[in-house]
Image (cartoon, rainbow, N blue to C red; front, side, top):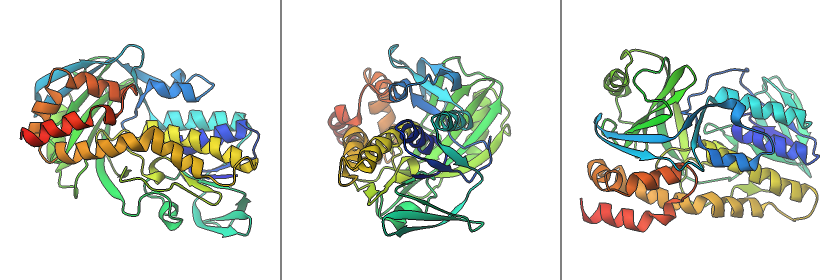
Length: 370
């Protein structure tokens, strides 16, 4: 059993497969400790998918969310106490999950850059940059948005919808209130900016979600960072491209599945990527375990589970995003400032509600009141 990519989704899959008694090799191309351009926010509800405590890698528990338009017109929402929002450092979370996978019996090869993947009769074969070859009965494709393998084997959407992000990790708390996340909608054309507190610092980001990246991130950060209590040039910029959800497509083939960003599961409205990464890693392991034990004849159950547990909500999230980001000022007035709206977004972030629960009302409100 081969897992290409040692990030959150790949490590989650490797842990559950190893725990189920399968021989697992986790292939990771990056060196340990590499800082990843990710806000690091995820619902605390993900804890239910793991038999070990995730709290050791939680930097901050978010209890309140602040929304602003052009750094003003603030709206505040309290998160449900029973399901808060967690902030983690991706490098810590990924390493933590990978270590649990190793403790469960998995093997890690790092650095290991996969340059070739092919089907060989009843098994899969991968080849590294150095020419090393490995074989396995099945493969989990978990090497992120830049993965070449998902499209090569017809896993996920035919046409990728890319979101462009710039992340900045800054030392110090600035003016950000403890246990509070910030979303800024007015400064970014077709997107938003965010600020999440971490231990000893803040993760700040800018993302655009419709069309080509037209955001001047330098000018946006020049305005945003001082408002957060930091110098306008603070922190190191990291740029990334995310594959956001773009329709219902099979995520499985014969002995192969795609998970996380490689499967284009990122939330098209709020850019949440960690929850679907962990969900897909766990679901992939469950269905692969059944397939490897010949309890099922194919891996269709994996695609069906992700559609039911994530994709159906994201189809509504995509429609909301298309309207909201085209008419952002109207969206902020009707979608954020409405008395019940912030609490609904808070419940979506905490995993207690899906976009389908609010979509029809929100879309009609945005379209007919603009």
